[in-house]
Length: 128
Image 1 (cartoon, rainbow, N blue to C red):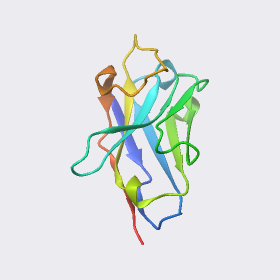
Image 2: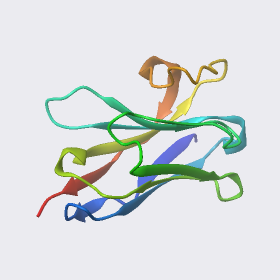
Image 3: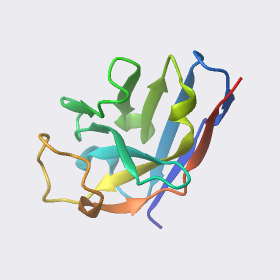
């Protein structure tokens, strides 16, 4: 019953923009922090962004700071990732995930083991 579903991925040229959505069901979104992760072939999973349960705190990976913006609308059961100035190295499958209750650190928010449910991912390809 518990689901997170990503959407909004696709093919975009370098310098372009995409907005990813993570729509959840089966739980009350406002109770949980959400993270965005990505994984490219042959590479480790990388933390992209994080947002606390009410949106008061956000965290970004070094590689996306200044280009990506995370937001949430709990009334719509959705979390968003606005991706601007996209680069070929942003090409990856992007996942949203629910951070398990009991974890609250924002100093380091990208430990995958702290996330208990994951979406299936959406492909983002940045190419000319």
